[in-house]
Length: 99
Image 1 (cartoon, rainbow, N blue to C red):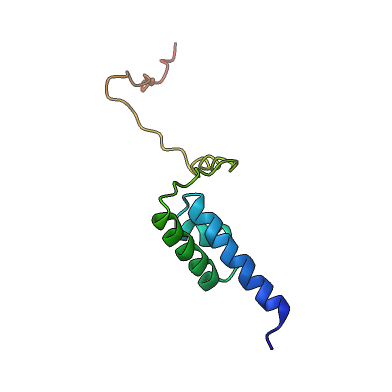
Image 2 (image 1 turned 180 degrees about the horizontal axis):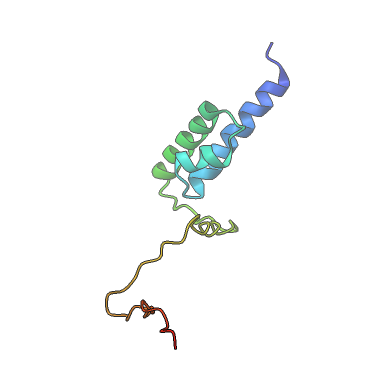
């Protein structure tokens, strides 16, 4: 007899896969959002829901409620470029004359 906790985890991962498919998520996104769940069980749930949705002509539901991705970090170094049309600063190359 199988351990009930293992069976429960497998059933939960299968349900996650089904929910991902119904929510129009790719299988890769589903894996990355649920790293602790069994990939094979997620895939089985996703595949079963895909077949069910195709047979019954069910449209998926667009995912909602996710946070937008964080903005990219600022660059480590700022690159400074000189524009050719800007005048360069004048430097005094002559030493002040002695009086």
